[in-house]
Every structure is written in structure tokens, then in C-alpha cells.
Amino acid sequence: MTAALEIIDLTFTYPDGRQALNNVNLKVNRGERVALLGPNGAGKTTLVMHLNGILASETGEVKVAGINVEKNNLFEVRKRVGLVFQDPDDQLFMTTVRDDVAFGPANIGLTGSELEERVDFALSQVKMREFADRPPHHLSFGQRRRVAVATVLAMKPDILVLDEPSSNLDPASRRELSEILLSLDVTILMVTHDLPYALEICPRAAILNGGQIVADGTTRDLLADEDLMKSNRLELPFGMHLDHIPHHR
Image (cartoon, rainbow, N blue to C red; front, side, top):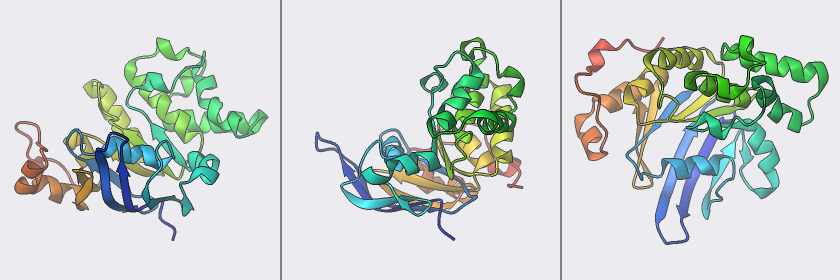
């Protein structure tokens, strides 16, 4: 089976000479939920920007559902990679929730009942159908984040890439979003500093530091490795014990 995402020997240096990625290799199979962890400046955002061609690699390859991420394929790639930004207001710009969710599918030619069904499907997945006719700016931050997820799900992507999905959420919104993410039948790559959230949602994690993948394994095992955590400037919240957290269903 073709992997949802395959990164092979990816290297990237910014114009100022700073090397952000150095020979990165990562494979995410269909249906997996993987957390990408690492300290600030590790290269996580740079890596994500390669997944839909915002940045182009110098050496190495990125493949989404077997399709090379390169200039000639960007239209197809961007249908298959759903990026959910940290700030939902970067994604919501239409007058109603419905229009925001319809924007992407309409741009690839969906119309009429097919477009309506796609919007309904996406809003149902994030439990926001009843808010379809509301202006996004009238919603709470947590609701706007769910709508931002819906705008991406409406494209039926092969992989959902979430940048710090739990940031700035109150406890109830955080729990609601985790329940939604766990219910989705989609491959997930979640970039996060929130280690409890990574553990709750993603059975597998990879640690990126210094532009390289330095560890890849079960999230619980990585977080339990004190030396690994310390050397990569990762810390569990004070008082958190892995024994108190149930294993993945």
C-alpha cells in the first residue's frame, strides 16, 4: 500500500545559510496518527512547509500518496495535504462558516448538490453543522478551530497536518477537539509542543531536533525516556505521570 506521506533524505537551507533540515526521513502510513515533536527552532515548521510545496527541497523527495511534491504536481498535492494552521483566523475569511468550508471544494470544480454534500459532510465531522450560517468571527476560538479543520476535511485529504492544534484552547474545547480528531478516518501528522495531547491522540511520535529525526517510536516510550527528553529540551508538565494515562484504544 502506498504511504500517505514519505519524506526521503530531505535537506533544506535558508538563503541566509542556516540549515533547517538535514537528511530527514519519515514515512507515515495510511490511517496512522503521528506526532512531530521537538524544541523551538528544530525545523518542524520548515518540514511542514515542504509537504504542500510552500518550500521546495534542495535535495531529497517528499511524496504524498505516492505523488512527488514538485511544481508540476502542486494542484494535485494540495488537494491531498490538508494543512490546519495554528491560528484559525488565517484560514477563515468568508462571510459565513458554510462559505468558508465550501471555498476549497468550489475551487476544484464542485457545484450544486455535490458541493452542499461535501460541506455538510465536513461540518458534521467537526460537529459544527448547526453553525453553518453563522459568521466565523461570531464563534468562539475553539469553534473557529473546528471550522478550520472542516475547511480542510471538505477537500477529503489523504493526510491532515495540524500545527499546534491544542494551543489557546480552554479545557472543554481541547477535549472536544481531541474527541473529533480521534473519530476521524484520516491520516494525521500533528506538530505540537503539547506532549499530553500528543500522547492522547497519536500512538506514534517522531522527534525532530537540529533539522534531523533523532527518534521515532511509540509516543509513550519516547516520553518515558528521560535522557531522550532532556537532550531534546522536551518536558512533561509538572506532576504528569505516564502511568495515569490510558493506552490508545
